[in-house]
Image 1 (tube, rainbow, N blue to C red):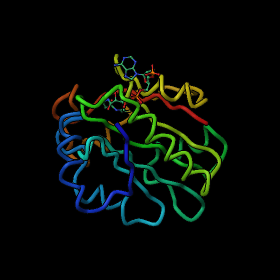
Image 2 (image 1 turned 135 degrees about the vertical axis):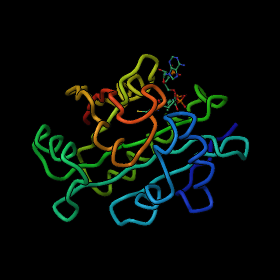
Image 3 (image 1 turned 180 degrees about the vertical axis):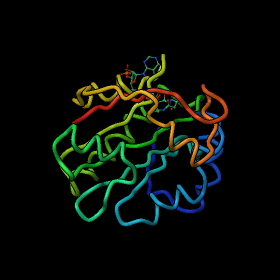
Image 4 (image 1 turned 135 degrees about the horizontal axis):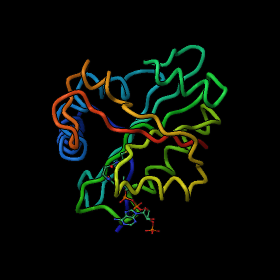
Length: 181
Ligand SMILES: CC(C)(COP(=O)(O)OP(=O)(O)OC[C@H]1O[C@@H](n2cnc3c(N)ncnc32)[C@H](O)[C@@H]1OP(=O)(O)O)[C@@H](O)C(=O)NCCC(=O)NCCS
């Protein structure tokens, strides 16, 4: 069955939010946040359709001298990789029933192609928990692990009041792995 990929539009927001609530926890993604990726000049996102159903999505942004990283962790990452211009493969989820069908792989390929027109260095921020298979996918795409940052979402979860699926009420004390290509 073919996987079809297209740019995210406002019509996809409700389904993406529903998927995120179950994959990451309530309020991790809200409409205002999605708009930053869909309507901002430095953001872009894709949805994948499988059997004509929205099966998953990815959100990406590009940071450059024109776009200051949104928080101090991204500034830290820019020091880690010695450049102020980099792309972030930021958030990806596939509906459980459609996982392991190559949809995540296809969304990464599509993102990498688009990043290629915008920036050369790409960072991925991975939620560090057992069974996060994104690391396997990144290895296949020749990303390299560079660092682990504890409490990565602590401040953001408190400010944005999102309820991590693992930690519950804020703060989220999950760790992030930083991978680089
Ligand atoms: C991580 C995620 C996006 C992967 O998407 P996917 O569409 O299932 O991935 P693919 O089908 O393209 O799988 C590609 C590779 O990942 C690995 N993989 C994916 N799911 C796996 C599983 N359940 N068991 C073992 N390996 C798995 C395999 O190496 C696979 O390659 P292979 O099929 O050639 O062996 C998906 O599991 C997901 O949405 N998880 C929940 C949300 C999440 O944790 N997102 C990441 C936040 S940082």
